[in-house]
Image (cartoon, rainbow, N blue to C red; front, side, top):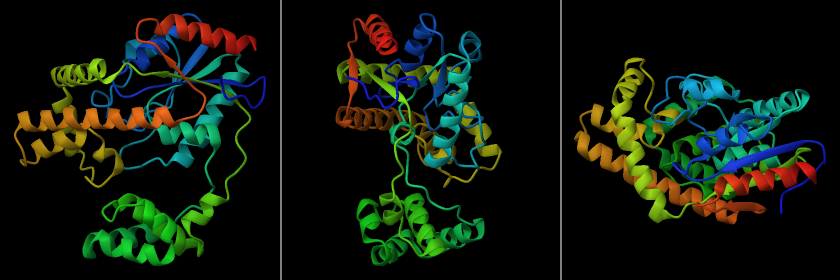
Length: 311
C-alpha cells in the first residue's frame, strides 16, 4: 500500500490538512523510531514567520532534529524546484546517518516535487522578472494573461487572469527560452530513487474546523499580531508569495486599516477552513495514501512504519 521504488532508501510522508496534528504525531513517532523531521510547509521555510505558520517551537526542535525551517527570508521566495533540491540533499544526509527522513507538512506541491520530481526549467534573470512584474502591475495582469494565452495556451488555461505569480513564471520562462512552460513540464524527469510511505491524518471537518478556529485564537494570544507588525516594519512587499499566506494576508488587511481586527480574525479562520478543505480534496486524490483514524493514529502510524521498514 505504499509507493516503493528502491528498497533501501525509505522516506515517510506525514500529510494532512492544516491543524490536523501533523507536528505532534511526528514528534511521537520520533520517540518510536530513529528519524529526523523535514519541514514540508511552504511558509515555515521563512524566517520571522513563526506563530502564523504554526512552526515547531524551539523546545520541540530540541527533542529531535528538524530540517528546512528558517532557511530564507520572505523576500527570497523558494520555488518547488528549489525545495526539491534541498529535500533530496536532506534525504541523502539522513540515510547516511542511518535515520529515517519524515516529511511533515501540508504543502502538496512540495511533497509531489520530492516524490515525482518536477520538470527542470532554466534560471530566469532578475531583470526579466522585474520587467514583466512592472508591466503586470502597470497594465494589469489580465492583459499579460491574454498574452500568455497566445504563447502558452495550455498554461493559460490552468491560471486565472489575476494570478500574478504564476503568470509571471509562465511568461518569463517563455521569454527566456522560447519554450513554453507547459512544454518544459512535459519533459518530466524520472522519479527519484526513494521508497515512500505516505500517511495522512484526515480527522473529518466536524473535528478539524473547531480546531482551526481554536488554533487561530491561540496564535493571536501568542503574539501573531505583533509578528505581522514586525514583518511590515521590515518593508516586505505585499505581493511576495510569503506575504499572501493564509492568516498573514488577513491580518495585514487589519494593519493596513482595511477591516477591523474582529473581521480580520474571522476572515482568517474562514480562509484557513477553505484551505483545509482544498488540502483534504488533494489528499483524497493522491495515490497510495494510507489514512490514519482519529482514535488510533499513533498506533496505526507505528504499525505502518514498522511494516514499511521490514518489507
